[in-house]
Amino acid sequence: MGEGTIQIKDLVKVYKDGFTAVNGVSLKVNKGECYAFLGPNGAGKSTAVKILTTLSEPTSGIVQVGGFDVKTEPDKVRWEIGVVLQETGLDKELTGREILEYQARLFHMTRRMAKERATHLLEMVGLENEGERQIKKYSGGMRRRLDLAVTLVHEPAILFLDEPTTGLDPLNRKAMWNEIRRLNKKEGVTVFLTTQYLEEADQLADYISIINEGKIVASGTPEELKDSIGADLITFEFKDEEAAGKAAWLLGKSGKIDYQKGNIVTVSIQEADRQVVQLLKDLSGEQIEVARLDVSSPTLDDVFIRVTAEEEKE
Ligand SMILES: Nc1ncnc2c1ncn2[C@@H]1O[C@H](COP(=O)(O)OP(=O)(O)OP(=O)(O)O)[C@@H](O)[C@H]1O
Image (cartoon, rainbow, N blue to C red):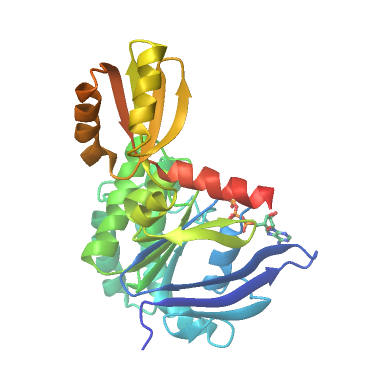
């Protein structure tokens, strides 16, 4: 019961100095889901991950990971999870293989099993040719992949990744995304990740919560979040201001005029890619010629900017 799931109810974390880093967060993650906490620096993401992974205690609220309570059954939680934190604690004098074998021994594997597991994991994260090299000679991307391999030693049902690709170049970021996706979709590992990158949340997560100043300010699937900020935008450019004026009157019947200046008119409208053909027909019926056209859909960036701006206003 509860295997591979995460449940948080009214979580609050107040640090010793009185600072409230997490302020009433509730959420649920189902087995096999990829859930992203998206938020700016200092939003409370790492604090939440530390609590979920038993490294820090909640001030109040209920936190269950893999069906176990983090406060009363932390040892059971630890067997269920793998954690990749921002700061890697790996001893850089050791080789990749030594670290993996050491970790496997910590999880009570025999010497032979540990060796086999290390070989398998090195292959899995694409480090099969680097296993005998010292970690200090690894690139940043290789270290992250080794971090991931280390957390997979005991085949956890839930994986916590705190900003897994911060500081990586685009190529290494994509490789890491592929690995996370494979673990989540092919092996059914539940993934809870934090990120400052909208693209990362969009690429990986089934469900996203935007967190700011310790509170969830918006949540949904990537599609729902994009939809929540509303319609698509179509920007028309006409030959002159007069044509634009006539067009705005006509376009205003189908959508909301978002912007009008000079020979430019922007309409906000649902499902713009479907509507645009009809709008062009309507304009042509009135002998209004369109010089240029641009259709754009809202991005998660727009959602993020809007919800954090609204928070600041309040
Ligand atoms: N031990 C601590 N004592 C007091 N305040 C802390 C402590 N650790 C973190 N904080 C504060 O809590 C807030 C949330 O920090 P946290 O590290 O959880 O944010 P974050 O969203 O992970 O940001 P980042 O992306 O920068 O890691 C910050 O304002 C931080 O300064």
